[in-house]
Image (cartoon, rainbow, N blue to C red):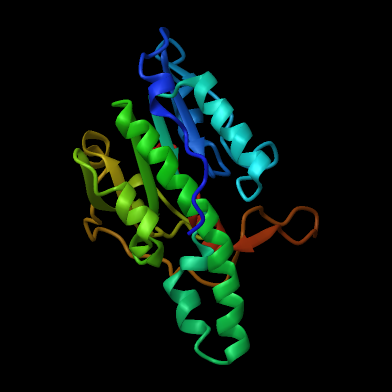
Amino acid sequence: YKRQTPLNPKLSMVRKPGKYRVVELYTWTNMVASAANLEPDVWECYEPISLPRFDILTESGRINARAFMYVVDPDLVVIADPCTAWSIMNLNMIQRTPQQCRDLQVKQEKARTFLVFVEEIVHFQHKRLRAVVRENPTTSVSWKEPPIMAAFSQPGMASVKTDMCMYNKVRPDTGEHVRKSTMLKGTKEICEACTRKCDKSHSHSPIEGRMAVKPMVNGVLPKTCKVSERAGGYTIDFA
């Protein structure tokens, strides 16, 4: 793990006045900020630290992201870093050839840059007594990576599991629930408020294959996407 020049909590210990501020890290839907926008008198929302403006894989991208954090001074950071390289399904599939094993190793080496930056953000929030939470699939092996284990081993941190089907996570084409068992780690009060296990009142669609996200119109085939890609986003109920 290559150490980076970290954010300095001492430069941002005194909270800037104003509304509560939320920033999302790596998320592509920005759903938490969208939900916060429903209470404009309480929350102030900002663009996520993600592409295209912030490329965390580059030094310049990380420098820009740190400067952004100092300016915004967020009260809450929600982290959803890419999990493809850490998927248990991915790991099972690569037990075929040495080349496939090597390809996954390269992906994980690249993904570790994200994990080190996650560690940096978590320490920054924790030392300033601000809130932070990370979500990833329960089975993601990234939870066992040293930067993540170190980041969430600090006092006041909690670890919980939740099922997204309890937050109205359904397939748009069939209406079936998608369970998407998710682990949350971070500020204790937030994690404990977000834990809901499936009540078994419904069945679940497997997270595999493709699905239609738009109906057929005038004979034009519907737009499709991978079920796993669709499962990755938050619902407004969860946000």
